[in-house]
Amino acid sequence: MTVQDALLGAHNIAGFDPGLNGIESGAQIRFLAAVAALVVRRQGGPARAFAADAVLNVVDELEPACNLFDADRPFLQAAHDGKGLVSGQRNPVKRLYPWMPADRAEGFWSRGAVAKEFPMADATLALVVHYHYSFGGNNSIDGRSCVNGSPGIRYPGLGYTATELLWHGASLFETLTMNLPKTWVDGTGLPAWADPSCAVSRGGAGKPEHPLWRATWGSNTAQCLWADGALVAVSIGGSRDLPPTMRAGKDGAKEWWDLRNTEDPFYLYVEVQTKNAPGVVTAVQLKAQRLDFGHQETDLVVEWNAKGLSTAVRERSQGAMKTPGRSASLMFLRHLVEGTATCPVVRRTEVLISSPKKWVIADERTRAVAQAAGLVKAVCAEVAKPFTLKGRLTALRDRRADAETAFWRNVTAPFEEFIINGTGTTIDPAVWPRVRAAALDAFDEIAASAPGPKLAPFIMTARSSVARNVTGLMGRLVKDDTAWTAIEEMEVPA
View 1 (tube, rainbow, N blue to C red):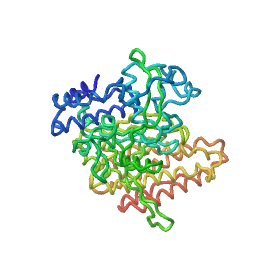
View 2: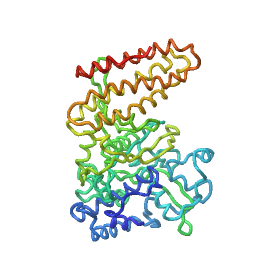
View 3: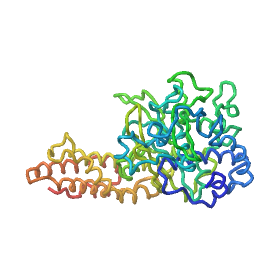
View 4: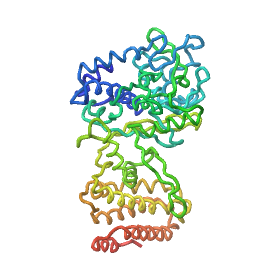
């Protein structure tokens, strides 16, 4: 399906190909959103569909910039004379993928060998992926090395998960317009790949480039060798086209794309305070929020609500062309980053679509849910304490992760029933006995695997300590006397 066909039928298309991974989905959404911004601008508003005449006019205007084989400005590529670029292991086409490891590790990390050449459709998607999601590394073109300035990917640190957050609608049209910033539509700016020199999108004196141009500028590019319409060899490196307002040097480049990144409508940035020992705020920094792999969904939802991120999601949505409706879902694109700091690689990338009621809480309930989520987090920490290196249960000192997993599994039902699905400005105190029971059940589950009876006295002591500490935590929050009495009177087995 062409871009033109996708936009013309967007109101009747349910979603994206489920066979695509997170980065492939993100690349398609980002590219289509950039074109959709021009269509909405042309038709004067989002309406209920993309107008056919607006789509056709925009596609015609962009066509010169979208020619894969243009001699001077090939689409998402750097022009070259063909010398030194040959097919084979020296210039593999897999380099366009940010999730591809080195040749020697390919067999371990990949389901199978990657194709040695890409037909035109696959090659086009791979180029869009590389443009939006490529990392820095040792590869270079004419002395320009790849750098970490691509619009769609962040370097969160090794072992962490860069996380994009989008609204997912009933149709492709809804998905695009709910994630389309008004600032992209305003003015006359173009996507950076259609205006590489920023001739049209340049701001006035002392002003930054147009928001659409900034959001779509990519730091890396590719030189490609084609044969009979197929991509057979690739060389990658840094882009020769730099933003007009980017200062010289590595610090200037990082300063520019760090600021650009915080404006990205597909990541959620919030202010994070750094405090010293007395609790005085010493710094405030905007940081992208993450949903790291290796955690159960309830764990992630609790962490999310403990931070009070509902308000940040709502505020970000106010700047979009279309307000998310009740039927909209949240879509998380999660990219696990591994490799090395100088040559990172995406080891896992996937799409998570979830009900927004878990992540976006009503204004009047946000504070209460945040407090409750913070308490549930603290309870989890108490459950896990005996199963750490500092715990006295010697034979179970490596079971912390198992204890946390058991707790999150046990607490899912009461958390969703009373906290997420509750109403009003307070939390029903009936939830706390169930949270306490979930904690002790998790402890018992892990303790039951202790080898032999010698640990029994230590297990009894540790369980009593967990019960006492959890009860103490709840006593700081629970105000209802009846509910608190019910918690205190729950029997702690000897």
